[in-house]
Image (cartoon, rainbow, N blue to C red):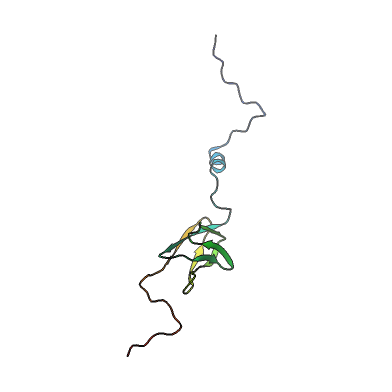
Length: 116
């Protein structure tokens, strides 16, 4: 018995993709089009993380997906001052913002004690 040669693709089969098309279609985009990411790292404590008027949750949070531009990322602990950082996000960029709670720093109070 002679081995059968592969038959040419029937017209109902999917078209052959060029390398550019194959790469674009087989690699899913991690980010929505025209967006960037901000990774928020919180060390030594916990806080509510947000950007502008949007709250993303209590740390740790997954990377924030934001449109390009300037964003103020904040970290609001249950006690103490709100910390914030300004970051510029570009399309497809991933920025990292770190908030560190210093266990040895004095807690902010309304009045400072004076030593005599």
